Image 1 (spheres, rainbow, N blue to C red):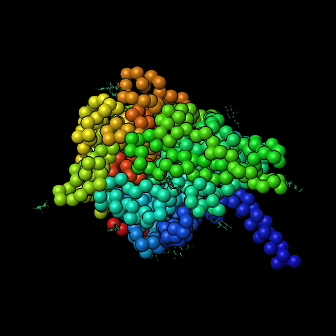
Image 2 (image 1 turned 180 degrees about the vertical axis):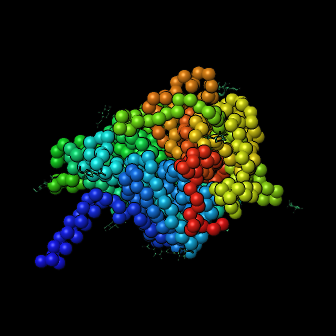
Image 3 (image 1 turned 90 degrees about the vertical axis):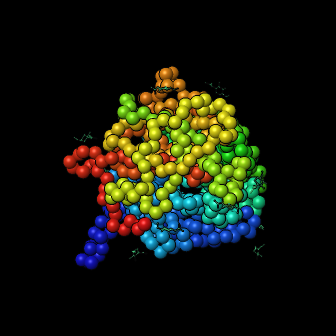
Length: 578
Ligand SMILES: *[C@@H]1O[C@H](CO)[C@@H](O)[C@H](O)[C@H]1NC(C)=O
Ligand SMILES: *[C@@H]1O[C@H](CO)[C@@H](O)[C@H](O)[C@H]1NC(C)=O
Ligand SMILES: *[C@@H]1O[C@H](CO)[C@@H](O)[C@H](O)[C@H]1NC(C)=O
Ligand SMILES: *[C@@H]1O[C@H](CO)[C@@H](O)[C@H](O)[C@H]1NC(C)=O
Ligand SMILES: *[C@@H]1O[C@H](CO)[C@@H](O)[C@H](O)[C@H]1NC(C)=O
Ligand SMILES: *[C@@H]1O[C@H](CO)[C@@H](O)[C@H](O)[C@H]1NC(C)=O
Ligand SMILES: *[C@@H]1O[C@H](CO)[C@@H](O)[C@H](O)[C@H]1NC(C)=O
Ligand SMILES: *[C@@H]1O[C@H](CO)[C@@H](O)[C@H](O)[C@H]1NC(C)=O
Ligand SMILES: *[C@@H]1O[C@H](CO)[C@@H](O)[C@H](O)[C@H]1NC(C)=O
Ligand SMILES: *[C@@H]1O[C@H](CO)[C@@H](O)[C@H](O)[C@H]1NC(C)=O
Ligand SMILES: *[C@@H]1O[C@H](CO)[C@@H](O)[C@H](O)[C@H]1NC(C)=O
Ligand SMILES: *[C@@H]1O[C@H](CO)[C@@H](O)[C@H](O)[C@H]1NC(C)=O
Ligand SMILES: [Cu+2]
């Protein structure tokens, strides 16, 4: 009897353990970076870089308050780093990931255990490589549930589906990257847009593998939408259905019903979908889930323009042949700037008593940052593939960011040996004010490389007005900040007017985001509190612009608290050597 009693007690303890910390066991992960063969678009089999052989990579699940540990083992054949996109990582820039900003890369054969502290995020985020163009295939979702015994601020969905938008290249993406670096030209465009790695019905040889979800009539589902694409923003819709935004960038929003949404690279949305169609057995029971590119720059050929689809299928006993899926919905045209703005401008933080917001009402540090696509001179005796034989460049306040290539900025700063890898002089405004949205002569679009960072005192309230410019081409730029989410207090078109535009700021329930679109020839104002000491990258989430220098770095100094709560954590012992 005794052994079985022991077994019973053990069983009960085990049940208790599982019920109270169902996720605890899954907070430890191993990510093996490895090549794996994938076939897309008619017999184009090739090795791609993956995590654990899967593309898209594994999903991390956690609850608010958890810390996830990921041991990244590089069994691939090139340097790599991994970033946890949208996770604030309080006092811990060491695990943040951007190559040569907060760490040197993990070399082939090396490993690095990164910790991911879920301190304020709730909803959907993602992780991705932050070196070269590796994130094309090295990415996956992060799903963050409410704390135990708390619930969503909306009715519990029947089921949830992760939808990751992306791009597929037939060519090796490392070659695409290296060619772009070598020639200074636009990177080759992708061969397909994808949903969960699949090009979908309208791309050659893809229909058999189109991603499909099944729903039941009358139930409500949660779609966790992520844009992992390298270059493409997307309009997204589910044919025949409205979608309700309830969260963005892992922060709850006021329910916001739309026929379509617009999502930039880096952004994530939590969407409710009510399966309210398929009224009877002769109605369509399949609907396309559709993403079409949104791109409002002038150089239309520089993006893959193709639609990608998945399928929403109602569970049915219908014996009728599958009805041809209904049309790809009436999404806005690819260059419809105002349709994108119409969606984005309607987002509001939930700002409820359970999910309050703390919008900085005053500002200590005013920054006005112009965003530009530029040219840089072609070195003597070389051939360059940018416009008119130059190299493409990009800049913030006319400083084109050159990433260090030997020691990362965090190590350089932390060890107080600024070994010349950066200068602390990123300016608070551009060198000259002019009509940023006017027609700017080609020969005024040159810029120069430097590695300028902005140093902030601890707990400073920062405002940045991002001003889109029309140098070479105006377009919507998705600006992403590491180490913080920020409030998007205002957006508009034209040149920012510092007298009148602040009057329209929303300081009550602005969206709380880690990535925001700065509209074509327009501006966006964000506010955040620099209460996270460390070294934090800020960059355009179009990888070509990131590569060309549309980046800068914030160094937030330690605060004065005596208990260490305002001090950067010490470096992990296994951080990759430079
Ligand atoms: C696929 O391509 C490979 C290499 O080009 C070729 O050997 C093979 O026969 C092709 N398979 C099919 C089914 O076309
Ligand atoms: C991780 O790296 C350390 C230090 O190089 C090494 O001792 C260890 O064996 C590695 N572990 C794995 C699983 O590769
Ligand atoms: C959750 O609720 C259960 C039952 O009310 C309680 O026993 C448990 O302690 C709670 N857990 C947490 C983490 O609050
Ligand atoms: C994508 O679009 C281009 C141009 O419109 C077309 O040539 C190409 O075949 C399309 N590719 C796919 C995979 O649909
Ligand atoms: C789709 O699958 C069917 C059945 O296995 C096969 O006959 C057909 O060739 C496949 N089509 C494509 C485009 O791969
Ligand atoms: C979607 O919302 C619009 C505007 O509220 C409404 O006119 C339309 O009927 C809705 N469509 C569906 C399928 O619910
Ligand atoms: C399909 O038929 C089974 C058996 O008659 C029934 O239980 C089930 O509810 C039906 N499902 C649907 C979606 O109609
Ligand atoms: C460029 O090429 C010319 C002719 O070959 C040569 O004289 C000159 O030294 C080269 N300049 C540089 C900077 O390499
Ligand atoms: C800036 O240039 C645009 C485009 O030429 C023009 O419409 C606008 O009026 C100009 N704004 C100012 C302040 O001059
Ligand atoms: C920290 O203390 C120093 C010296 O007292 C002071 O100058 C500085 O403003 C303080 N910084 C903060 C963030 O409170
Ligand atoms: C407002 O903008 C003008 C240029 O348009 C600039 O000269 C002035 O310094 C700005 N004022 C403030 C308070 O930023
Ligand atoms: C890989 O990273 C190491 C460490 O920073 C560096 O020395 C090496 O040059 C890198 N290799 C390549 C191919 O970039
Ligand atoms: Cu950009």
